[in-house]
Length: 350
Image (cartoon, rainbow, N blue to C red; front, top):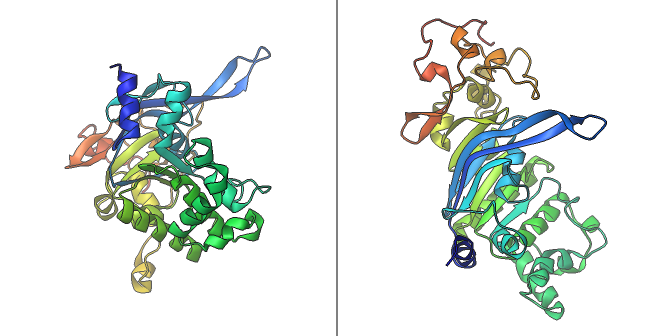
């Protein structure tokens, strides 16, 4: 049996492990008159990440960190320039055609904009059941019943199957998108900013829905978000990204309780605390300096121009992820003993 055949069998059965290894993805920003790239941006640059059964892994970072690109690579919507995306230890980068389509059944995506994800000319029932029709799980006469069952699973009135997307609220549309993603019974759901287009109360409803679905079905989730509060609510582990790299990764509660990277500390300082007394005493870490040009990244640490604790060695040494505690990794020279003791070269943030 070939490796590809083995992988196909696993996907139809019980794939339960996604492994991303040394992923690199670049995009051309400008081209010359002949169409050749003149400048490229490294959206993802050497990222490792694992998602296992029943786990939610959060990927957090500001705009331009590469988190959405990582989600597209993990869901096989795009191919990496180099590196491996493996399911149960079998690399998927060589798959094409039908074999690739079969693998994609086990990984579904929920996008940021629920209205843009739905065809306004098709009913909600058609949108939800279309994956089943395409993959020959149901015939056309059975689409409505299948859609109604899926809508009920995500807490919607089955009667909405006869309506059109414009007749639904934002929260309802996102639930429809989740129902469609669940149609093929995936083991992994890649949720790319699934609540950022919704109001606060609706965000909570969608996050609680994802949590309930995971508890009921064992669904695994790769949650991409710029909001650390969202990640904290749902994720078992978190990877913090900055300029294409993971700078800190570990159990969510460990990272929240004891953040190690200065960038992680700045992100967490922006998350409000429910207790007003505690919130009033907290200080916000304001990042100074300019984010590096993505087409001409500096040598050494990519965060050095904005870091309050940058040392001379940060300009020469590009830190890799190292274990700072069991299961908790960080890419920072402050935690690797290189140049320690020289002190910060910029003022501490306010």
